[in-house]
Length: 289
Ligand code: FAD
Image (cartoon, rainbow, N blue to C red; front, top):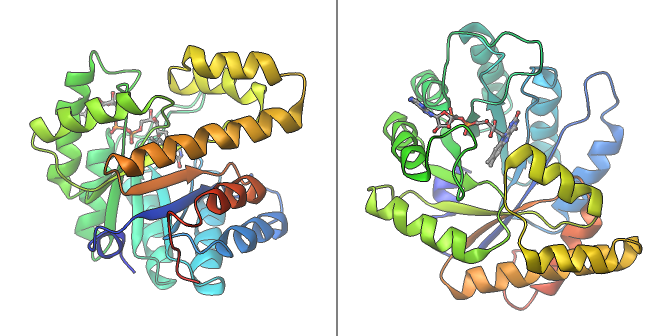
């Protein structure tokens, strides 16, 4: 099913992101992750794509497993920084042959030492290519705190319009830890004339190591409130995990209370974390079993 159809009824949806195995490693473990997350009946499951192109095959394989073995709608990510037109078309053909109808079109970040390909400079160029290829529902990424390379949040939102004009039908946000940041961003997007459905990306932070990675990679602000939680429970992994899940759950409940109906959980391939969040929301979100 296309994601544009899933969001049509404006019901609350909970979806999950996972990543494929690293190049050269077996699919077996990741198949178990797919199986466990699929048991939660998410609205759809997305699978990331390595910006260097190393997961070209495994991203498609995992999307196939999600949709054709486990019966959950799959969203395959595709990045263009290391991908020319020919390679992009190969991936799209593979996806089409497996009945995958949803693609998240991304630029990606060039791995250190790699020269970016020139066919697509921005995600909007890839979006155009996918739409021209035929019958895919295409989504894109957006950044409530602004993309780190953008000169300002307003400039980033102006650039976001290229994606929408190219045919992007929904957006998934970068993680954020303060809901007021998302609310202000959604208002700015509406004022700029962007009104496609937005999936709020929620990252349950279950280890202190994750926080440092988040700050350095995404530029997402980690608020004092969360830093205090991390300081208090850093020495106790189980307590930290419980606190991280509670924080994410609370964020989601507040989002839903404020009319944000589509929530995307960055599971980091941890079905147990995803399961606990789904359980915490079991009376709030009724998934189809
Ligand atoms: P773009 O939309 O191309 O934007 C990149 C920068 O260029 C921004 O600063 C933007 O303002 C600017 N820009 C955009 N269009 C124009 C234009 N026409 N003219 C001038 N400037 C422009 N990375 C992976 O490697 N694999 C993944 O699977 C993956 N999944 C992700 C999923 C989500 C939901 C998110 C939020 C990010 C994901 N990323 C992934 C990371 C992403 O690839 C990086 O954040 C990357 O730096 C930007 O990708 P983008 O698609 O947003 O790029």
